[in-house]
Each structure stands twice: as C-alpha cells, then as structure tokens.
Image 1: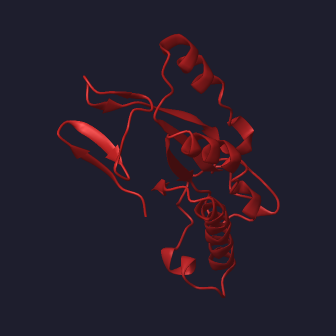
Image 2: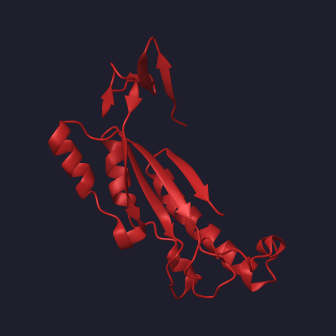
Length: 164
C-alpha cells in the first residue's frame, strides 16, 4: 500500500517529496476529470493544461461507468479501457481516482438513466436468484477486473462510487 502524507508543509508519497503537479506555496493538488468510459475518455485536456501551465495535473480522474448509456450485454456499461492512461499517469508520479455512475441493474440494457431508481428493490441487489442481483454481480465483477488490472500494475486508486 502506498501512502500520501504531509510533513512540514511538504507532501511525501512513499517517503519521496511529491512535486508532480504540486504547487507547494498553495498547498493544493490539482486534478482533471478525463471522461466517462471509452465514450468520452481522452487526455486532451490534461495535455492542454500541461501546455498552458507547465505542470501536469496531479490527479487524473476517470469514470468506469456511463450509467445513462444503453449497452447489450449490460456488463459493458462498465468500461476500464483507460487503464493504460491511468497506469502511465501513476508511473509518471500522478495520483489516480475512479468514479462510477452505475446504471440501474433492474434494466436488461442499462436503463439509460442512473438517476432512475424508482423500480429498484435493494433487496434484489444481494439476491443472486434475481435478474437484478445477477446484473449487479456482473457490474461488481467488471469493476473488480479493472481495479485488479491496476493493482497488478501497482497503481493505488481512490474510488468514488455514485449510486443515487
């Protein structure tokens, strides 16, 4: 496990002074969201920020799930194809975060609306005998595959999950 900590007004990451995208005088780590799944993910904004400021944003954020999309089979709503970019950012000294705006697992094709939970019975999520429970488990398995890929590359990830 890697550790980010502050000592004497300096950031240290695994006991190394942290300077990547870091402005010591402001005590702020900057970051940039790079998109939802393969539908919108790109690092063009990261490159533009770097070009304009001379500093790479310290944090690269990506969303594994574009929950308002429709996909068949449903598990492909969970997309971790950005792993290479996240790994590269990490290897260059950056931090990585992953969001998930998960689709409603009640719908066979994703539901198209991550905010629509009116027909979701939470008890079905943990019941593998229901279609909802099976889809939910598939979502979790795909998320675990993506995170495991990053773990094998020794990338520490901060995960934010959004289910409304």
